[in-house]
Every structure is written in C-alpha cells, then in structure tokens.
Image (cartoon, rainbow, N blue to C red; front, side, top):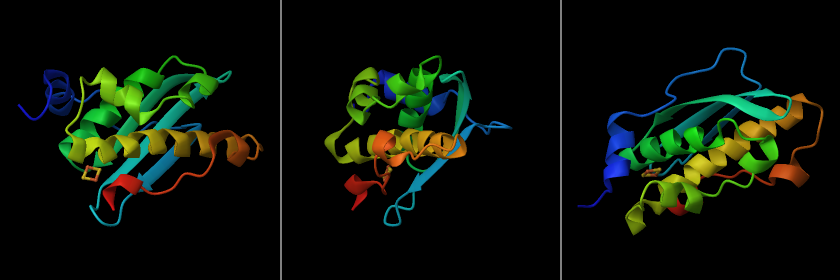
Length: 140
Ligand code: FES
C-alpha cells in the first residue's frame, strides 16, 4: 500500500475544509510546476489559534497534509504553530512515500504564510518570526 490508512482517511474525509469569515490570517502558497495551490485561514484570539480551515487544489497527499496540519495547529499558541514542521505532519499521518514528501512542505508553508499575514495585520514585521515563505521547493 502506497499510503497509510491515516493518509487515506484524511484524504477521504478531510477535516477543516472551507474558508473562515473574518480570518485573522490568510496564507496561500503554490507551485507553478505541479499546479497545486493551498490556501489556509486562521482565527486567532489572544495569540491562540482557535480555528483553522483550508482549501487545497491539489493532490491527495496535499489534501491529507492540509487536513492533518490544520488539526494540529488548532488550539495551539501561535509560537507553537510556528514550530510545526512538515516532518511532524508526515509522522502524524503515518508517513508518506518519498516522492510525496514535498506536498507536506506546502502545508507547513501555508501555515507560516497565514501566520505571516497575521503578524503583518498586527503591525509586526513577520520576517524575523516566520522567515521567508517561498514556493513548495520540493515540487521542482
Ligand atoms: Fe502534491 Fe506538488 S504534487 S503538492
């Protein structure tokens, strides 16, 4: 089996699909080569992520990682969410095939992009905190 049961479950029944009205941070990342686009919406109160939703136009692994990543940051302080790595998301999913690891990078970057937007809206320069948010490097 190429994909773990957890990946298949999150692909078949993705959590947190959709948009958030009045989101406090919105992030979008994409890769021109594979064409996958991931959009992330975060609701943040007192520096805690109270809700997270996503829209992913992409492959099954990208959808499963968006689903898991949004689940993992919900209820977490922003400082904790910034530490979420694609590796942690992949581990929580029970692994991904090597050629699909880059899809999980998209989820990590989408969250960082949304947090970057959140900081900008707060009048804080996001760069020292979230760093550069680029395109999905693994796709190229
Ligand atoms: Fe899945 Fe590029 S093919 S994100």
